[in-house]
Image (tube, rainbow, N blue to C red; front, side, top):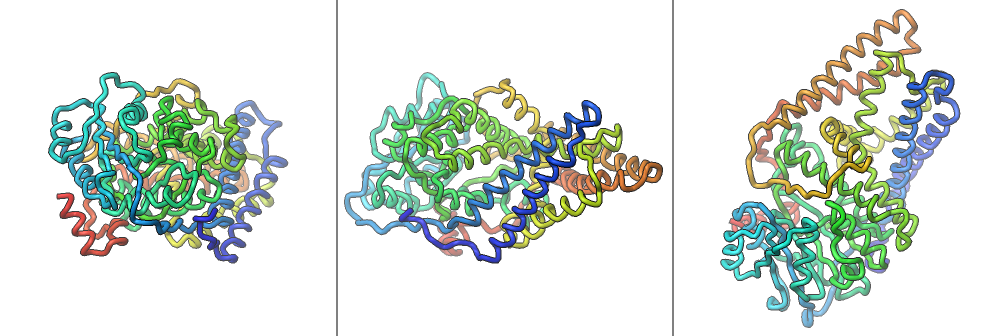
Length: 531
């Protein structure tokens, strides 16, 4: 691709990752050939097949990760140099339904302040699906246009499609109610459409002025939960044209939207589905590494889990209703990328499975994995430690397998229900907005998380005691794997319990991504403008 940089990963790093891939594949082959408990009981066979299916999908995910993040460029496309005259007309949509006017005002002010060679060509619309007088007044105050529809169908996608029917510019920039663009947002995104043909959309990262909920409750040294996705995975997907549209901080070609059927209304993850459909009809999606907008991270568990549940359910709806694998417009590599990204949201099922399996063995003697320990142990732990610890070191703190497992385990007990229901076809396309800008006290969700993690921790500790006791009678070789497994689970559950017992805290040392980009004077200027 002519706009993509050619730089690739260090050969030593590729070699180490290759070793991790080889040992992972060797482990999967060994598992299929020698460790399935076919001669045991019904439950043993059932759980054995479930576990190996989960491990196989994990191996596929690692293979795709290997291809995208190591064998392809992860450099951000450079903003093309274009002439300063004859820039296109552009519509700016700010989606809102129930957010506070205080939160909205910061976003409106930031959009009004965006630079453009011909400012009259920028048309800002406050798309209010709540049809509120105070929002109409806000639009009037800043001299932007106000749109409110009478029939509220299709949730956020329907709101945007209504705005499309009332506007006409060839390009559309979209922002969530809390996402405030920097002054140079349009100057660093629109040039891609001017310079190159067939660009469907340009997606920039999400960034936040405050720590995410994990950073504020556990450690400020943790990597921001979504950073690796935006600044590594998305850039690699430029090479395959499988960049994910994230529903905010992006610019979209109106013709590409029309050819794709406008914003996808049959899923609550309208952004992912819309981006996939745009790429499927032949347009190029571009992800950049440059932070050009910033918002407010959710700092309460109830709001966070509501948002992630919506994302997960929406992605499952996308794969079912818009058919990733049956879409003829997508190449096999694109399909593989989208499948892996969407399947990621089954992590709650996987985490709960890995929590329960050693408990089933310790309590009831159910064996999901059988085999010669002298063979199993070296094969399993070789691939496990190479993937876990070597990769963590190679990514220099940008990605952590340990933290990722903690992120997922914390969410799993309350995420698994909605995800399984959606997978089985009992979900809903009702769109629930995540509340932002509101400080929330401890909720029922916090108490449910605490209770579920505490019960699982107690069961794991008792499982360790039972496994240790039984190993003294039946032999350590029979219980060594469940014991080690339970010890690891206990460590993760203790971290989850710490998360539950702490409140979100203000971190004075937190440095937002845009602070790093603009420097202290410019960044403070942005903050003053917002106020």
